[in-house]
Length: 312
Figure 1 (cartoon, rainbow, N blue to C red):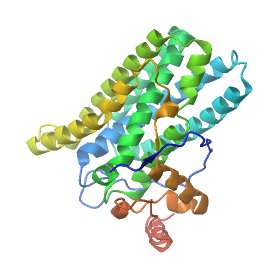
Figure 2: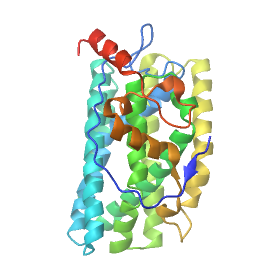
Figure 3: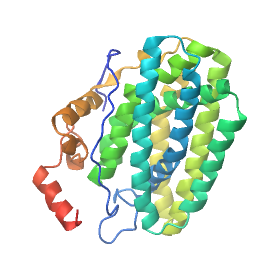
């Protein structure tokens, strides 16, 4: 499912999306299994979400430090919008992560402790050049992941919890919006191809390593890690994700690469239009209709009824 268009003129928008997370599972399923068709993908996403309140403040600190050396006014403005978007992202993920912790997952504390230490060490012990290279590596990887999530949205998010699916897709729509910023900041201050590749490899390896540790711990707590059917489902989704991402990731290795060369997905631009018209709808996508070429919101009457049931 590919619906990309080339549009490098899009501007970043700081959105206050009205997400609400209550119960991340339906009756009869484990907490955190917001996609009942794939508990394994649920826990991959949950593990990645646990990193956001540590990763994204680290990116923000690195960018703010870089801003002191930037002389280009347009790039300063882009950096400020990037920081504002990332700040909104990690606050929403923290809000969602709180529901996972409230569900009783004992693994969350150790997972978060490791992530906190990692980004404290990177931020205090590594050079600004390294931290900007890491930021650029993460953002280029996130661009590839964002395209993968949007293109494969039916398989990954079909019939899942609307709030969680909307959180993830919103996050990566905005990752696509600010795709140029970390690259341009790094190029403005350093521009070394070698260090750009160091950042890409390090960021990719680090994030996938910690995410893997996280989802394994969560699946063990669910009692699924030793379940053969679950392991096969996990292998299937991982192979599908890697197969989709890998060609995009290798494209980043080109010396001439710039994120603006990557076509923006039309579905993501249409999500932004949906938000402009209906912020509540953009926060509650109808995951039974993800096959449609434009995002569709859950009817407001359904959202209101669910909110009453949840006591909101």
